[in-house]
Image 1 (cartoon, helix red, strand yellow):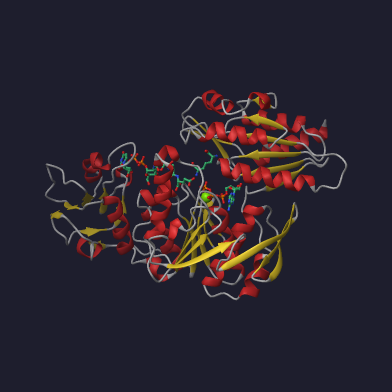
Image 2 (cartoon, helix red, strand yellow):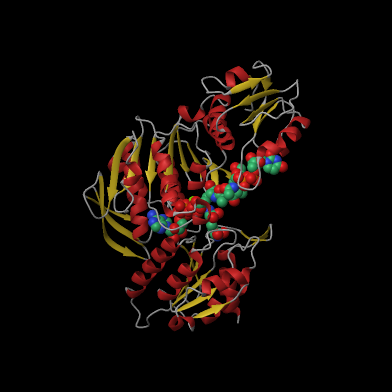
Length: 498
Ligand SMILES: CC(=O)N[C@H]1[C@@H](OP(=O)(O)OP(=O)(O)OC[C@H]2O[C@@H](n3ccc(=O)[nH]c3=O)[C@H](O)[C@@H]2O)O[C@H](CO)[C@@H](O)[C@@H]1O[C@H](C)C(=O)N[C@@H](C)C(=O)N[C@H](CCC(=O)O)C(=O)O
Ligand SMILES: Nc1ncnc2c1ncn2[C@@H]1O[C@H](COP(=O)(O)OP(=O)(O)OP(=O)(O)O)[C@@H](O)[C@H]1O
Ligand SMILES: N[C@H](CCC[C@H](N)C(=O)O)C(=O)O
Ligand SMILES: [Mg+2]
């Protein structure tokens, strides 16, 4: 059911602090937008200062396209008498409050849980979504891979959508009868106020390591951004943190939410222990109960523990939660295995940060040594680093790949607007002279994966890192079809036919 929205400015700005207004607050608004290109008759255009340009420069364009009201930090020198202008301190933050009022506070009408941290957000949010569906609830998911309303998949453009889109999606979720929504909260989203005005019942912190220093400048700023999410939680919410992470408690320093912890190493509200970890899954002890899970690796033990803790904090029964959780599969592109007929194990994983790459490779190294055959399988890693993103992680990731693999093929991963060879040279700079002979540099990712398959012998493990679920390779503004899993599968098939 689609209900056309129509609201007067005085209702949209109910209880929102304003610095100045010009024009009538009885003006009717039928849509919200922060992009002049999407403004139409009856729009409220919100001028936001961005990283590339300033939305204030597009106020006139938005009015020409029919916008009847403008929310901004600076009212233009020349105003249009038919348009209402509202000046506020921070238009990005106010946009969140406006969106919540316009859509009638959807986040307050369901249980919204946010997940933040460098790695594990998609994994934890998706596991929660799958768990709560298995427990019988109608659920929503906002994640890097996709947004979802029960079975209905809505493509995602960001890890955390802009706040107007989020409120629209929450409204659809409510209409569908969803009671629980799990969303990723990226550090960009916190800084850009994409979560302003949302009402969370809980927040989860996974971990924090090196990433996005291009955007945040320093590691301290990055920590502050993640912490900003917990600072915003209300007293009625819970804040669940990983105390095995050095910054786990820092995250909760200033929150008024109820503090809860999880750990594999120390005393915590939710305590877990790994009993066995293999290519078939994890055996863990959680709250004195022994359970087998389908996920692999220590990092997934943390993800599972945070999911368990969240479910208990939301009032679910421990035994039922563990029973359901033991049957749940990982999200796409997270340690996804593609095995050849002659038993080469391909692993496609979204590890695109130094910490994630290290975790995945350490896991592969540990699991490899427990294999039964006489032959010690070789690890061949195919990896690249994204263009127009944090440059400082490039040499570090190449070094980690070399230290933890027998062969490394350096290749492209969404070069975007950069020259792929520049990125590859920056990666090569991190490789020690001793390790250099392990590496081959092949700019074309397709060729790189085929080379790995050509080099592999039965039982070897090929890790294709960085793109996981992605189905494109972005080069100079164009997204070409590309899927690591498909390329790997095709290369295995060609090997069989040779
Ligand atoms: C660096 C960054 O985060 N950019 C985001 C930001 O864009 P921006 O600040 O560059 O915007 P801008 O181009 O300067 O424009 C400023 C304003 O003018 C408006 N405008 C602009 C042009 C015009 O003709 N008319 C007009 O109205 C724009 O709509 C915008 O409101 O705000 C936009 C609207 O919300 C986002 O789409 C955009 O995401 C870009 C595409 C992006 O790639 N973001 C990535 C880095 C990101 O956000 N990633 C995180 C996950 C990271 C992780 O944890 O791994 C995510 O949450 O997805
Ligand atoms: N708890 C964890 N700790 C460390 N590494 C993890 C953890 N969970 C997953 N990983 C690794 O990080 C990769 C990305 O995981 P995931 O997609 O869940 O993270 P994310 O935080 O959503 O990433 P993004 O910032 O791109 O949205 C996985 O493919 C895996 O290699
Ligand atoms: N959310 C992350 C994903 C990075 C994935 C990697 N494949 C890349 O393109 O760098 C980003 O937009 O920075
Ligand atoms: Mg994610």
